[in-house]
Length: 304
View 1 (tube, one colour):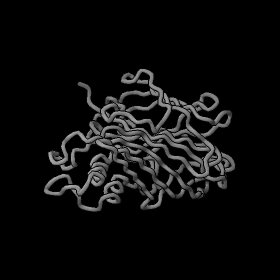
View 2 (spheres, helix red, strand yellow):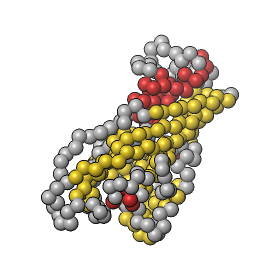
View 3 (cartoon, helix red, strand yellow):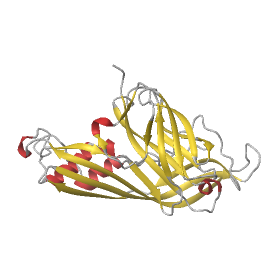
View 4 (cartoon, one colour):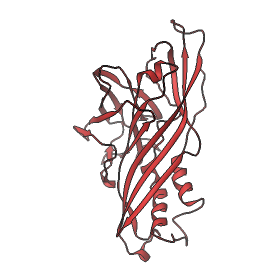
């Protein structure tokens, strides 16, 4: 198979550059001119909590199976988003609390590399494309914990206090994730029912290196065999996509291993994306793109 170049979009850059321009640092003599600018700078300081693009681009699918679709057999697929997605951040400051609403529009192209041959390996691979528009949402709360003029970080006393996951929904959309269940040593049985629920920054899901996690995704698919994928680190692989197994009407399960104990993987905040895709999006060359994704931040730390 042709080795296609990696496609990445860094919302880390967008959150920093769109909001407050190039060159702002939290060192030296720079000071925000008001509370809103201080919050904008903090969004850049905490950009790993707001990364919302890791399920786009080409990914490693090592260990996955071929997908037999009709009327084509698709051997590889990925989404490519257009540069400079429209990001809107609304900051509402009430006393010593700042409520932040983050939203984004991601337009792009779904690439399908498929064949009409009924045998493997196929004689010809055909490149099909579909346009798409995704809309994302997430929230955060910042608190002023220091007097305005006594902040060594030059953020007017503000700090990130609470944050949510993110939800990405296509337009049009018919498929929906209902909940996600996590079972592992660190979290014996945890059910997530709302990706936009706020949680304390210190309460982010925290795993140990290569911790084995059982994941179950509940959807509205019913008797239709749609597709669910996980986009995240997997042991030594940074940008990995794996497919869940359908075990019943609307229920999909998979086993995932947290990142290994290696540089760039531990003591770093990551995101996992649970990605539900309508069956016809991938097994038909004409039907529109239809997807719903939940993204959650998580942290990997070495054991004490």
